[in-house]
Amino acid sequence: MTKYRNTGIFKKNTKLNETQETNKQLKDLYTTWYNYLISKGLSNICDKGKYNGMLLLTCFDSYIKAKNKIMFFGKEANSSDGQIDVFDNNYQNDAYYSYDYAICNPDKTKKSDRNNTFFLKTRKKISGLSDDENPSYDKVLSVLPNNLNKSSYKGKYTPCNNDIDDIIYSSDFTFNRLSGNIFIHELNILRPTHIAFLCGKGYNEHIKRDFGEKFYEMNKDAINQLSVRKSPVSDIITLKKHQIKDLFGIEGYDSINIVFAIHPSAHMKKDIRSSYEQSLIRFISNQI
Image 1 (cartoon, one colour):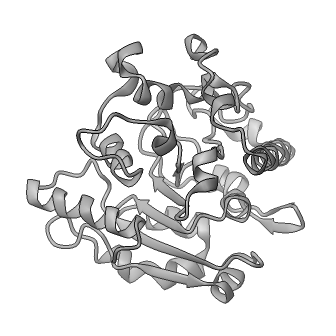
Image 2: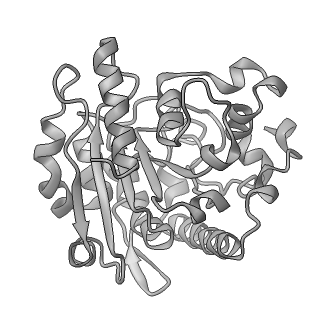
């Protein structure tokens, strides 16, 4: 990471006052969260060295300026960076965005730093990049990548673990007069208009854990009907203002459009993958 310490990516793409204020809120949020996690005893129960650092979100100018503000959820981070119970000192510094830098500067980075996986290709698609278009910060940084597992065990599949989950995900803490878990606080600050859950089946318990039983029950049919062969992307679910308040306790949040989809790394026939990508593109551009 240190080799990306002076790329300028953070400063150059966070010039707007609203962006800077949002990032201050995010940093304050994560500081509050980490203090809460430590007070709850996370350091005493986590398998140190086995769980990687938490995924922390950043707001960039292109997200603030976007009409459709997009957040997508993967499963877990395939990384060995950081440590679950230690706040990342690189956060909101250039080194934290080494992967984004590598995507946008292929001529300056090693191929191994920007593996062109199906997940990355899908990320580019929902950022509005066409196949033959060179990645730009404006587009790549306009979407917010999140994970259902903020940290993952050895960077691999991470099933729900009651001891750790009760501290990290299930426990509510107060920030900005709102009580909720980390995902609810992120929604309250960043207010995405479009959320794509790119997790497929098998993560039902994670969704229930992160967003609550009522949210899961409302959406379980859409999740369970996903199929690699027939239905790789669900119909759109729209949460209205009153539903967002009822589900998450967030006031004044106009609406969220949501889809559930098979994970991009799933084996799909060429025509199915094309349909899958086009469905996601139509979703984020309000063309459905």
